[in-house]
Image (cartoon, rainbow, N blue to C red; front, side, top):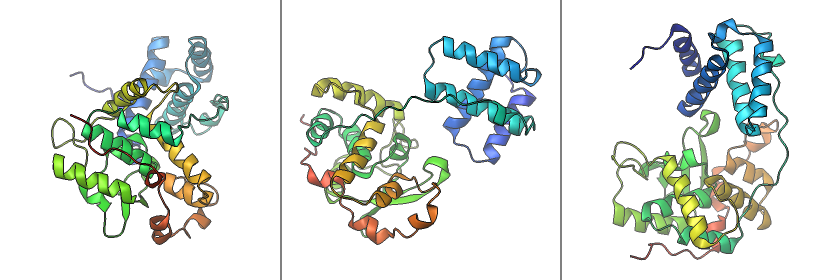
Length: 286
């Protein structure tokens, strides 16, 4: 295994100190390394004009706007934090992403999609993601002890930005989880991977989404985030206060943070999950 350069080690240490997630760290390191390879020079010897030229190059390759802005984030961190050039980051511009409406599944499509997932563990994981509006990383990171049936809530640890939050535990989801637990007997991680010491890989969920979408005949792109969008949309359509929806999604880092703190666990617990309006087959056939 190649030894890390002092510069890369320092950047990793800077990210670790600031509690950036492992996935974000990998993404930032990859972006800065790609920037360096493009010019064939160490990134600390490259300047703003080089950054601009690299952005032009990336756009010419047809890179997506989110991927381009991820690179911008990485370079802003590298120059501003690791190199300590506080004046540079604000001069590295973000791309203005085109606004598009998120893909949302209807209630019938959610049922068809989830029932097209043949694996009990993966189906239960994706059902949990929809029932509680979780991100893929939050879903795979759940532990058995995070399901608090007594209080009727799910504890989500280390969500986006490293924040913990509480979401509702759907009555139907609890029934599904109890069947799943009886059959799978998970210990520690709620959805363990091949080894019980690690959770299921998010790529397993992504792959299951692609297969289930095709099997269910759904003519839409479906990802774990699609289930999250559908959760929020269905709550809104069912009359749930948008303030509660934002808290459930973990968006309480917005400018109106103060009013979100007034949303109690009791109110979250009493909010009906959209899953409770559906009828899902618990155990896949066969």
